[in-house]
Length: 620
Ligand code: M6R
Image 1: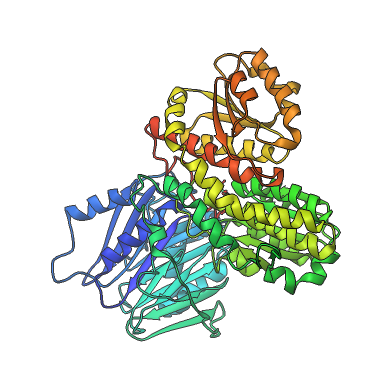
Image 2 (image 1 turned 180 degrees about the horizontal axis):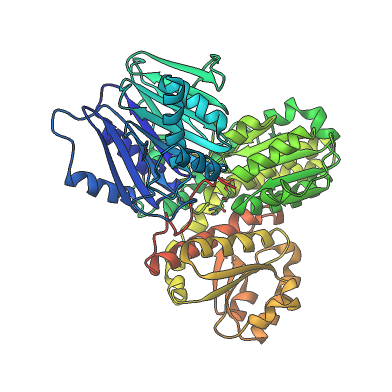
């Protein structure tokens, strides 16, 4: 789950590579490096962030007037080998002629390394990647072949996942790249004379809209000023599928906010409107949800006797909400599985099952593997994805993009609400097609869904208050989040947000389950975030609240606006506008996102790039 960038053309490569790395830094920031091929091949590396790499470059920049126009670069999330300069990419081949960047994992690296060592190759890093560049060089020598052929031969021997870019001093007009199970996009410059390589479209979008997403086991050769040539590993030419990709570049900048996470929290009202646009149609008296994927796959969806949702992390929490929505509106039993568990659990999948994959990036390795397996077993795969053209989107038979724009902050915020909105629309559309939802409830839910963006705006107006409240928690060591029904997955999500960016241990629990164990943790030092804004189970939640009050827990309650009863009972509260039970997650998650953000900021932490994490988990 690293980020790779490459450029070959007529412009100076370094600034393009660095800008690209900044855009991909969400994928990992343990080390960064770049290789520039001019008269010489020069490699710069730094432990840490892309800014550290820039500092290294500034100390010995390329001579003015001789700036190379070919290069590759990398930002790393460490898997094999600790974060360090020596393990930073690009890695060099034995002769020093070839250099390579890689995103993925070479599973058989140990045996390949041993074989290469026997043939005199020496290794300077602890990475699995170095094996690839040495193997390519070995294949090149062995078969007296060119770089592209050597890459193909080497990749036939490699087991695992890769997106790579390689350059070779002896073939300076070429850049070769390839992928399997890790994403890789190639941008074709406007005059077809320059090419941009990247792990996603964000580093490419400002130069060109023409993008080719390589398929698994494809190798692309780009020749400066000439051509893009794609083959499979056997060397047979395959057709490059050139897509027109539009990325809203304003979404890739902070836009005046101190962090991407805060910007993305504040983006929610607008992007959720984008998510619903064209999908909720009609006027006030005749509103309906139209999802083309549901229309096109109506027969198969109606036949489903069971739905399995596979996802990870925040997307899994959205899946738990999706289960409640689908079971309520469509009366179809739903199971929600962690993709990483599902894939190795020998799952029972019947041809009439529908498997829904939820993923922001569309590149999560476990989710991708889970749907590949379910597909083989005959299920219809429905993707709910943000990354347009991503691997999961392409692997799905049908799907609905959440269309919330690029999410850069590692902590997922707007993708979560986008996923819940799509799951709501899907449940309504399917429920209507099945006849399991009453017209009145259908219309009421759609109308209320359309009001969600402005209700979120209302919550966002309390940002200053939430920031003030957060100060008392700067030094908290533990947190408990409690909610019931639709708010239980929100409790899990609130706890995850806090954990990942502020490093405070937090647990989410169903409020009523607390008395079966976690209640023992409660004392006056335990902050408890209580989600009471759920009117269907309100009285039950109040009883659970009493249980915590009796044990002197420090309660911060999320309450429906004007709930005087709870206001009097708790230490602090945040008021949110009322909505339908099934839509409460879309409202109650907002103060939790802001709370974790402000706690992390007050602890002086890097909110957008929390330690040990990366945005897109493309390794298992
Ligand atoms: O891209 P995906 O939605 O498939 O990613 C799944 C998880 O890795 C992701 O939601 C992760 O838990 C987030 N960092 C949470 O904020």
